Length: 384
Ligand SMILES: *Cc1c(COP(=O)(O)O)cnc(C)c1O
Image (cartoon, rainbow, N blue to C red; front, side, top):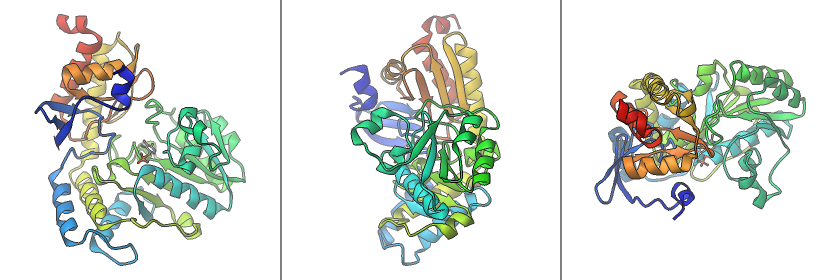
């Protein structure tokens, strides 16, 4: 098995159980989940509030379609809209991140009457035909072309280029507030404000894809709140159901009023709705986003202090952490897993990504720093 196989597919670790920030393999080994579940478990694995809500719901009513009022769906809807940035007063549930972005682009097109989409280099928005058209990497797109789109790409982080690409034929600008798959890229201050002003002036929709950045990971419920920018459309998925497959789109009134018909059979099904309600209300009531900000700040500072000479940069926000290495990230991820039982993800060739559950404490953060030091700077560790 090559290094690449390890991170892209067949990992030789059979996981059987999860609890909090830990995963347990069939041979009983404990692993720290620092990203292996793709940011899908903000409350940690098998959180009792989510498990109880789901178990109760699946026994009472596993499914009925969304034309019937069901308490679980109404609770999930109310929790999501209350937790959404002010100004986003309606929402629609779907099953995944790509489907949320697909809906966002449809809503923007129908509400504006335009078709042109502006997206950013190094973006990732999902793998169905529309979301894929707004995704940057040729590797994901080329074999499937032509895709659904009139998409123009502008360099991520460059406000002037973005403003120049938007005109009165633009339906939407779609951006990640911090890019995830593309390498944990944080835009310069003022970039999202520029996107906000430009789209508002042109009558286009600003779509912020918070599938990876949302659910408290960056220190607020949504990363756009860190930047003080409210989009017209916000998409979420990954951590929304703490591991159950669910996504959502939250929209402002002019989008809700102008969007044409769109739906999906499983939209807001009772079981995933129970998971959403439990996840969102626990995150908000127990103030996990603020905890993520604190532990994330501690983790980044400790990484910088321990590995100053060995890495190029630590970037991100809260517990969305990218470490730009001076070597390949695949091998570092493999060594962390095999030698230190820490599961982390690469994001591009030289960036190691940490997306642990928000419930980790400073002790777990120290453990991550020590293990990473042992992998990439064993001399530094033996001196300490
Ligand atoms: C993972 C991801 C998606 C796609 O979500 P799926 O649930 O895999 O379809 C879209 N956007 C961003 C920013 C993501 O990180």
